Image (tube, rainbow, N blue to C red):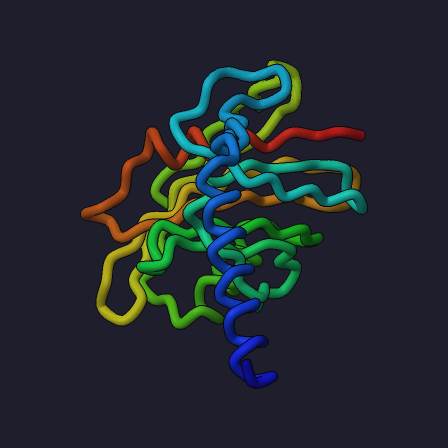
Length: 185
């Protein structure tokens, strides 16, 4: 038997042995996805956690969303579904929140920006005061709705936003994501 043929036979036997052993091995149990916040309610989505140690908070968002490089001033997290909507963003900034929001939407190419509502609220912890603002705007001729949950911490405002095309916006789903904002400091 030639050396090349012997190597080929040994390789084939090794592949067959690995295949047989793999078939006999017990099936691996996939890890169970965490679908609850550490002290919170059941979520309707499998979450990915983003933690910001510098400002002491975390947010949960659907694991179907893909992170993108933040592009706006103060942005620390941008993520979106593969179809680009819905999308989320987290920004930490100083100054006038409304002016900063309008400037960020314009920087994205947004126009016809209108604040629809702005209401005082409390985060899921039951004690952290926040403001939930609904924005209507357009980009490329598409009407967009953005829900933005903002919390003032010292001289900074942490804004967690959820956006979608107006006709596809599910405000309940958006609020479910936004209210995962949790402070750990």
